[in-house]
Length: 226
Image (cartoon, rainbow, N blue to C red; front, side):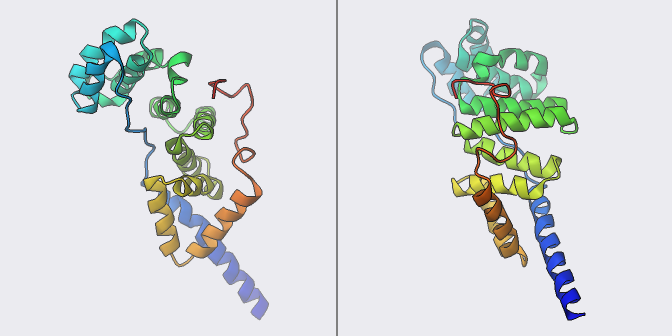
């Protein structure tokens, strides 16, 4: 009988540890990298206006350059039209700016593309979720810590794979992501935190980033250059 109680207690502690991940991540949201390259030449005033939070002026300054094909201007216009400039939100035009060349402009642009997909299409469609997660993983593999965190968050909240999602949040924290660090700190403070972290570390050790779900193929990649 004692063995049964010990086993049941162990299972309950493990279950509590697993449930800890979605509970801590539920209030978090995906993020874009806030840093913007100063930009050369004609787009510099528009970039400065964007960084200053003067989005209406940034829109007017960047639009001509974006229409002329400037990659950075197109990226910032996509950000403006997908939420930054609330009264001019236009996801159709934002995605038109986020063509293959623009979203592969940088890992931050690719991370943002996945964010925009989830905001526009919603988080309930499985195919959209998987595609966004694959995009996050590609950006994360190319160096975006924000994409690494966003992937973990999306997997945990929407795919019902809390340990898998937490493994990516843990890796983001190890690389210095502020939100990831905060979540791992809260996990450590929980009564079942040691068990939770042991489970995460075991998964990270046994399944390195490259082979852990989702495994990318040449068909699922957006940016061959990455």
